[in-house]
Image 1 (cartoon, rainbow over the protein chains, first blue to last red):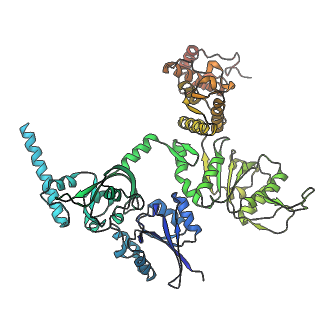
Image 2 (tube, rainbow over the protein chains, first blue to last red; image 1 turned 90 degrees about the vertical axis):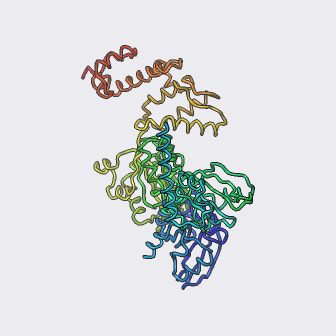
Length: 122
Length: 482
């Protein structure tokens, strides 16, 4: 069984505020709920199509990020990437919550996005 | 006058009380401004978003307009990190507030975008300033921002300019193509591009490739109408050594060269029935065999086909396989001829001039009004390619300044067709009018009634114009049959 690859858009130890312009992602290979590999990658593509294509090329299956514009989110979905967006918080705390299956989580959501969070959880 | 002032004061009081009531309901003890502070009232009534942060980058106040623009209730915003509330394109690398707090210098009208809670990108202009307490000590920063969505929409509407890759257009028909371009590019579907010769079919195919996930792999174009059948087959699929006389070693075909990328099959309607069967197999099963080869090769290639013919008609005539047509016609894009989107001519002229200036190291500033009038009046059977050739020709003769009628190709320099050299608008209009009538007459074999109908004018108006504009007519014309 192949590990599942998840990417987190990060900035200064926290989830990057806007994925459309994020410059760094943390790649996690997760197997049976445990991280088996971890690496950091620069993201220089500003064009939405290239950004989405780059994530797809890296084999990302799930993206955890902060705010994301709708067109980019639609593109990522078209590439088969699952998105958990509008997350805010410390990277390590977000990873722990994600591994525990506790995302989206109202305590780790950006202001103004609680309704979105509720919808996703339901 | 006194009564008016009194009324104004009364209305102001009502507004003040409404704001105060709302503030009290919202329960905002952490706002730095006291309720009696007029600054607060001003901040609540303006349409610009305003928020303040402390030195830890946490929001300390958030006005009504900021709530509206961001779609965030101030009770949720206050106390949170500003980057997680404001979510602007500048937060990570170019934070204006950080710059102001570090240098003390305010920033005025910087452009950026924010992403609101609904995922909308909102263009804004923002300004920043230091926030000081009564003793003059810096306690944080203030940021004001203005929603420019409407301005941006109006600007786009006014400019009407849309560009995707090298495709430039402001016409509605092309805008429809631009709208779906990213989605079509992102998909892996086969695309059929239809359009007259010179409308930019290959350019559209390249743009689709460049916007697609296959952009880093090759884009291979082949003109199916330019090669004889046997040669086309070996070009597309390659051959093995010994496949035919002279084939002394293996040669990869275009499909092999395009592996992982995009294959552009131009003039697909010209492919012979035998080769259509082989192409159908590639499209259906994604495999092919090189000439003389026995092992099937997998083809991971996206196919974009183009034709200037109506493939449906070709199918009905039995000249094109129906099954291949359905395989190709997954996503169809129609490129309109230039004569149906003449509003693009000035834009395309600018585009070509700036490109030739760049490639030829010249500094031509544009075309004169006479040349533009002429270019607008022409019908362009060769479409954009013909316009490009006209501009390229003019670049040979013109070194700087404006392109004038004398710089245009000889075939267009039928002097009586061109507007006179005087820059008067009336003479330019007359020249364009004459040219339009001449071309309509030619299209209708000099039948005046048909020409008048096409031009939407009465036949006697046409006669009058022919006479006044001095348009010469042939001895035998559309009135004579047989």
